[in-house]
Image 1 (cartoon, protein in one colour):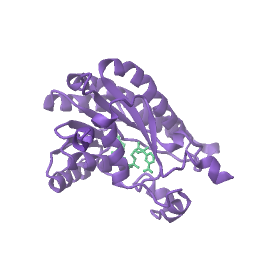
Image 2 (image 1 turned 180 degrees about the vertical axis):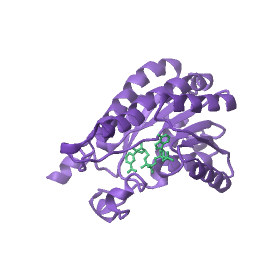
Image 3 (image 1 turned 30 degrees about the vertical axis):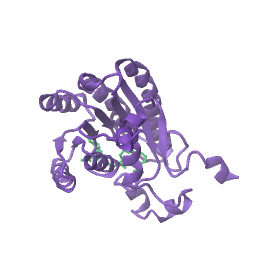
Image 4 (image 1 turned 135 degrees about the vertical axis):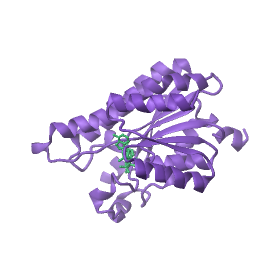
Amino acid sequence: MDINNLFSVEGKVAIVTGGSRGIGEMITSGFLANGVKVYISARKAPALIEKAKELSQKYNQECIPIPCDLSSNEGIEEFTNTITQKEDGIDFLVNNAGAAWAEPYETFSEQGWDKVMNLNVKSMFFITQKIKPLLTKRASVDDPSRVINIGSIDGLNVPALETFSYSASKAAVHHLTRVMAAKLVKENILVNAIAPGPYPSMMLGPAVNHDYSEIEKRNPRHRVGTPEDIAGLAIFLCSRAGAYTVGETITSDGGIVKTASHNLS
Ligand SMILES: NC(=O)c1ccc[n+]([C@@H]2O[C@H](COP(=O)([O-])OP(=O)(O)OC[C@H]3O[C@@H](n4cnc5c(N)ncnc54)[C@H](OP(=O)(O)O)[C@@H]3O)[C@@H](O)[C@H]2O)c1
């Protein structure tokens, strides 16, 4: 029952897709600060390599960049081949890389569907499928491997913006999490999802001109999410303390989803 036994992730090996900034960087930082070796991926190689160097130095822990485009099967193949050459096994896979698209209903384009569904849903499935042999190598009854899929509260609530494909993709992530959890739990791989609310990032920032004050005012906790909020939840899910939590979608949103009806009354 010692806190170090309950929540330790030390000595583990993780993959965080889209780890070069935003929520992926926050989770990566939490892992590195607590003794996890982390592979991060993103398309823009210079920014990714620079970020990995910065985080390795900051936390005195190995952060390894693998530049790749995970929106295609070729990119996923290349990514998993590179990881397989470097590691015999992986303990945690965080499927975080994602894209959003907003366009008025009347003109909403096919591109806005394909880009978002391909990366947010289809790639998440195929990355997990291809990384599974590495997850299996580390998985045991006492210490299962973990997959965390990053969904969104937009997949639980109806969003304010015209992000039709994005909110549908995130609802799909939450359900895919349950379906994959049912399959992989039999092999000691635990799959769960986190549904974040507002976190400062390149995805959310442009929608509010990087001014989060209105969002903060409306949030039940009167603030946006911090690295500690999301990294703490990811560490819980990956630790001994999270080893009986399977197929869940856990919000990290300051209470937006669970207090929505109260706020309307
Ligand atoms: N921020 C929020 O408020 C919020 C709320 C709910 C859910 N989320 C979810 O959280 C996740 C992270 O979002 P974020 O806000 O941190 O966004 P972000 O700042 O835009 O970061 C996205 C990350 O994914 C990478 N990425 C994008 N497309 C990729 C591709 N095709 N292949 C490989 N990597 C790719 C990006 O790097 P490159 O551009 O270099 O590829 C970047 O590292 C997403 O799934 C998002 O839907 C965010």
